[in-house]
Image 1 (cartoon, one colour):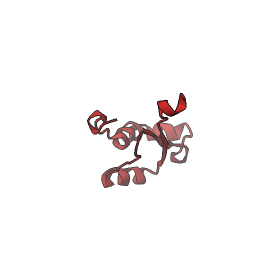
Image 2 (cartoon, rainbow, N blue to C red):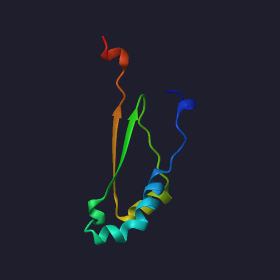
Image 3 (cartoon, helix red, strand yellow):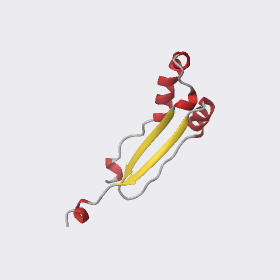
Length: 83
């Protein structure tokens, strides 16, 4: 994948928190606590696994008390798997 083919930046942390925060009180009433919530980032890469997080996003996520898990895996080379 060339740099020109990369998807535009998507602010997933703020989008997730924007959707979650207004519902926290309702979740608490149902017995769902912040300890029960885990936010996953799944990332498939071809040549390099690099990520960047802005301090404001990380601060907001930290203050929310929500866990962030990141799982990365390398794309399988089609040529080497078909031989």
